[in-house]
Each structure stands twice: as C-alpha cells, then as structure tokens.
Length: 86
Length: 465
Image (cartoon, rainbow over all chains, first blue to last red; front, side, top):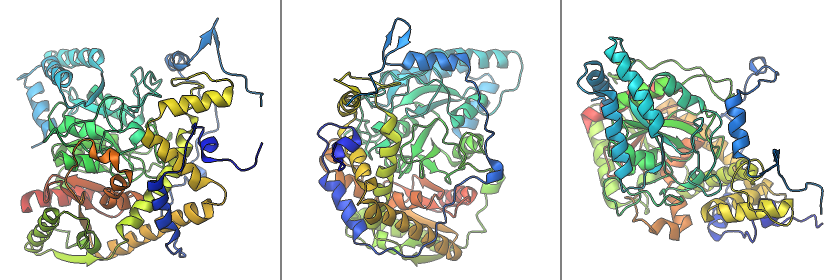
C-alpha cells in the first residue's frame, strides 16, 4: 500500500476531494505570522483531581439500548465485517 | 418578565394545570410549519405533567423549574430518545444515557418536549444542512433561522417551548438567537458539562440556554452549571444570584472592535444601529473605548481550521460498526467508506476532509500548529483587552438573515458570516446575544468565568437602549 494517503482514504469518504472554499481559509492561515504567544486556555485537569481508575458498570437499561443500536444481529450475535483482510 | 416565574406561579396557584400546559405546547409543536421538530417526547412529557399536577393537588410546593416545558437541540443524549444530530447516519440512533446538563434540568423537574432541528452535527450557520427540512425563521419564514441551533431559537421565539438548550461551538446559540430576536447564552467554556453532547469541536463546544428573558437565562444557567467528573474540563462555579445582576454600577468601561464596524462587509443599517447603541451607552456616563482586533478572515480561518481538525477526529468513530446506518460493502474499509459517503451531508464531508487535510503530515506544521498559535494570540489579546474594559460589545452578525437556499450555494460566504461570533469561542469567553441594538441583536462579552457580569450588563442594556 502506498505511504501517501489521499484525503478520501484518510476521511473514509469515497471520492472526497479538497474544497476550494476550505483551501481559501488555509491560505489565510499560511499567510499569517506565528509569534511566541502563550496558551492561556489551560483546560487540563490537575493530577490530584483525576477520576478513579475503576470500572463502572452501566445499568442494564443502558446496555440494552447499546445492543438495540447495533446495526446487524444474527442468531444472538452482533455481526461485523472481517477485520483481518487486504 | 421571566416566563419561567410566570408559569411557575400560574401552576402553583392552580390557574392552569401542568397537563393542559404541556398538551398546548405539544399541539403547537406538532402543527408548526417551521421545521423545528425532529421528534416529540410526548408520552414522557404527559406522564411527567400528571405527576406535577398530582403534587400541586396534594398541596405540595413545586420547584421553580418543575413542570416548565423545554426543548433540547437534537445533539444531546436523553436516555431512550432518538438523537439524530439531524443526520442520516444517526437517524435511528437511540441515546443509551442522558447528558449531564439535561439530567440536571430533569432533576429540577423541567419537562422535555422535543428534540430540535438544526444543522447536522452542528455543521452550518443556517439550519438548512439537515435531513428534517430547513428551519424557517420565526419572524420571516422565507429567511433562515440561523444555526446551528435554529430549531431551538425558533421554538423559543414562537413560545412553543419556554426555553431551549442549544449548543454553541462558533456561534450556534448566539447567531440563531439574534436572527429570531431572543436571548442566547454561550457560557464560559467549562461552566456547563459537555458530557452527553455529540461532540463537534471539543475545545469550543459549549452548552447554553436560549430564552425570552435574562432572568430565565440565569435560572437555567444556574441549574446546568457545575463541575462534572464526566467532563474534566468543567470547573466549580458560584451560583449567580437574582439580585446580583440587577445593578450594573460597577461597569465603567465598554469596548468594541473598531475593525468589526469599519468594515466593508457590515450592512449599513447594522453599523448605524450599533453606533447609535454605543452613543446611548456613552450618554449614561460609561466610557467607551475602540479596541484593535484580528481581521475577520483571520478569525474565521483560525476557527474553521481548528474546528474542522477536531470534527474530523470526533466523527471518525461514526462508521456504522457499533451504531449508525451501516451500508455493507465488500470488506470492512469499504463498509466504512460507503456508510460515511452515503450518510454524511455535503457540508459535513467538506469539514471532515478539511480537517484531515489540516492534520495530515506536511500540512500540520503549516496550518494546524499555526492555527493553534493564532488562537493563543487571540486569547492573549482578550486578556489584554479585559485589563482595559469591563465588557466588549459587538453586533452578532454583519448582515440580516439570508433567504432560505442562499447559504448553501456559497460555503465560504457562510463561514465568513460567522466573523463576529467565532473569536469569542476561541477565547472560551462568556457571550450573550440580546435582542436589541441591531436587527440581529448585540453580543455582550466579559472576561472568562465572569458570566455574571454579562447578565448584569444585559439588564442594564434592557433599560438603556
């Protein structure tokens, strides 16, 4: 497989092409000057405030809806395409 | 006048029954021709209304939000309801859990009526990019409702809901609020939990209320705010007291961006009306300062570059494997590609492709990292500005709402129409649209975490202009 991935492959969208309108936005970014601005939007959580690393089981009602949403089912099994292929 | 308080008093004093109220609103929603409804939650709503009536009949006191009917943009999870994001891909998707912000409203007794139409996955500024039909403006149905929370703004404007919960990533609450002459708040990023919203661009996604009064905005904001372990960008905030926002004496200086106004793109009437509002503010003794800011095309390009990168990542999981409208192909990759090609709208595909370009090797340094740097410069500029002024005032949009159909023809023009809203999103600032000052309203912005000051100034403007 080629190492260069085109936008349609990257996006998993058949026939996807670069948009002229979006390219114009990128041109504006390219023409600006980068400076040494500081990141003032620090939204990271403090290390002493992390969630507990424990498994929390969902209620049965939640699990039932997750299964209901699954696109294909056969004989009680959830059907997906083969993963190992090329 | 607060509609929430008015209805609360009517319910408590037995002037109306909750069942009657809910039935009336559901009828209005069912028969409306503005395409605001993706699905109605009628069975749940009627059952909840009966419970409220029973409580009142029993002589019990009800909470302020108990029995108040509200709408939910169709990007929020509400357990057991369809959450489509107005898209083909999730047309049959059922939420397995409930978003934190919505759960808090449910816990307070508010009654959800409707999942509301808007641009698919938040991708749009007109609420035309949807499988449920373009949302029509509440004032003139030939015009767009704005977006992406168009259905929510129209439902509030037409009083089909008392308030609605929209989502704002680059202006998606504020702009439709402006187009339909209602209040719409984008709180400070992190004040309200994003857990359970279908993510568009996670670093600017905000949950916020749309309502017909400042007091209703305050009540709903207080109910939804707070730290949530399920969204680690949330922070603990103080409740905003009713009395705290009645007096704006502490506001001494207001700024506005000169280049937003001295600009060829702004409609002459919007400009004149904005400047007339500034004169009225000056006449009260408040100092008004002109501020320098980034050019509109830089703001729009920075926002869209980052938002597209984030949405390409966020939507990569929508491939029809675990949920969504899977279309089988010859193999796994083919299944992904067909499912996404057939089920995403043209605008969503445009943004995903743009985002993957931004993030791909060779582009990321030149565009993505530079975009992040520009965002930091914009945020620093705001920090500097708020050392000089208490409030920044701006129009919501440069122009009046376009006709339905026009925005879809020219995506670049649609992106550029967001010029006045996206900067505040990148800065993660609290910004409120008020239905005053120009045909599409005014935006009031304060420094980060100062949502209270925004509401104070809104009350001041209500009496001033």
